[in-house]
Image (cartoon, rainbow, N blue to C red; front, side, top):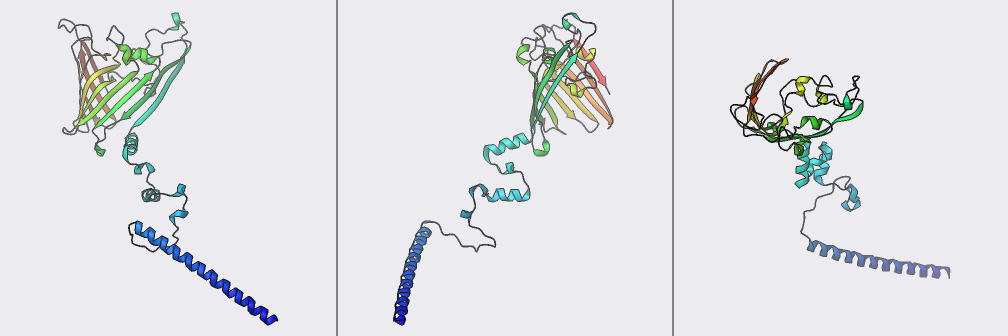
Length: 312
């Protein structure tokens, strides 16, 4: 009886195995059909043997997937922005060669002479006594020409706010509409013409280079300015040219509306002739001759304004 039971169990097990094998064969056949249908609907691509350590793309999370270009850049250490195309890439390339500078100049001054209204007379910037003052708050955008990169055009924009703007910009007695230019200390475009060693041309409004001192306090030895600085021009508007003859000599020429004139008061245009000599690396001599007529008429009978500046 025991032998009969074992034979019946063996027969049942064999039947189950055959049925399972038949099911697996049917599933394999169905999978083959699906693969054939998929291959027939997509272009045929040559099969390449998987390399060691190959992982299916479907097994990689989407946040970890990288394009071949990005992966190459990560391996080579190149900045990701270099792979950006289209408008984003152009914008990033432009900003990479553009400088942005921020500055703030404030002061506290006390005049022991106790001037009327706490106003320090004959001063250009430190004008108030016993007062916390914001002299200059500035933001400077500059993209200079660079012939090494094939860029001949450039420009600079200096926006300025604070007490100094009231001193730097002219008044209605000197130019027609000073208020609309008050916060624009400098704004000019630059072009290097392919003439000889390169002729640099600027057009717009720029800080005057007449005199020994400058507008921005960080560039000065002393915080306060001299009387000579106070009575010299602060800015000019027009066109200027610079030609570097060689390493030791440069020539300058300006044609401008006038001194401290964003808009001219007459039809006469002021001029500057100058040169810079550098006999040694430690010695520089700058010579400027400026003349013009800053009055309401350009009559020949009116005396001209002349500046002769030389510094070493």
